[in-house]
Amino acid sequence: MSLENKVAIVTGAARGIGFAVAKRFVMDGAKVVICDVDDDAGESAADDLKTLGEATYIHANVAERLDVRNLVAETLNAYGEIDILVNNAGIVSGADFLDFEEDEFDRVLSVNLKGVFLCSQAVARHMVETVENGGAPGCIINMSSINAVLAIPTQLAYCVSKGGVSQLTKTAALSLAKHGIRVNAIGPGSIMTDMLSSVNDDPEAKQRLLSRTPMLRVGDPAEIAGVAAFLASEDASYVTGQTIIADGGRMPLNYTVEVPDEE
Ligand SMILES: NC(=O)c1ccc[n+]([C@@H]2O[C@H](COP(=O)([O-])OP(=O)(O)OC[C@H]3O[C@@H](n4cnc5c(N)ncnc54)[C@H](O)[C@@H]3O)[C@@H](O)[C@H]2O)c1
Image (cartoon, rainbow, N blue to C red; front, side):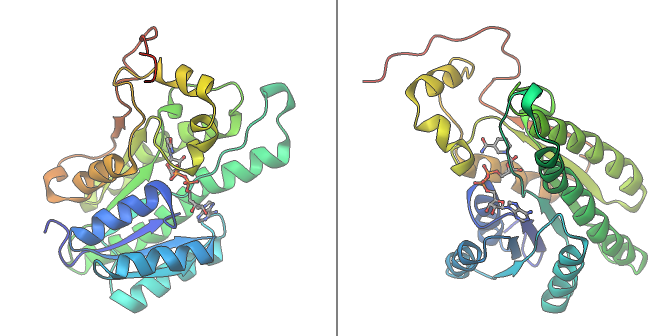
């Protein structure tokens, strides 16, 4: 198994893409700590993962420095090391640009961008220390989005935050390269999770979405987990500072595709 004996932290992993990544890592042999702010869902997700392998739930709001410090300390206490960090926790907040509230701007940026910074810095400090003591270098994977590049007029803070994640990925990758620590990101397109449920329940919105998706379907969280498993593995040993896009072909598309009527 490609992640045998590795210790991973996956943030925001009570559900959705984070849970799929945690599940894939456990199946690949890793010991996985999942964190979230939804404790009931987090505990229940950890119970599911424990049927497959080694997993623990720890409450942590990634936007809170003390929560992050506690997450790192508790993980080290339980497993003695951290080889992989997946910064997955993220939120959306919709309003037109002209109406977007300052508080909402701060709330989204604090989770989606500051949270990635806080977790990455705390874990990277530990990883550098490990390398200096002769241990193996780890890696960090950030859940970005195609919205790091493409914009939605009603998702100001989200798009800004993901653009920031792209630059944070490159900056951290350059800083940590000399230690052998790799930092990459994944840019999912439309993936079937709670975050996308409003689109899924609205046939017109779904039609619009598919008309911009050459593969004519939304992605499955497991398809993003597969990219994370690659980036975390030795197969990606010379890959750093990159964002791998997994979007069913949306980014290369400069028009729309015809969507067949549903049966
Ligand atoms: N679903 C998509 O189509 C899609 C597309 C591109 C990028 N993404 C990104 O993938 C990541 C996961 O998205 P998802 O669709 O699985 O979302 P989701 O809403 O299904 O799950 C997000 C999880 O993060 C947790 N969370 C929220 N705030 C947190 C905080 N402050 N600290 C810790 N945990 C917190 C939530 O409780 C939830 O369990 C996000 O970063 C999102 O921006 C999703």
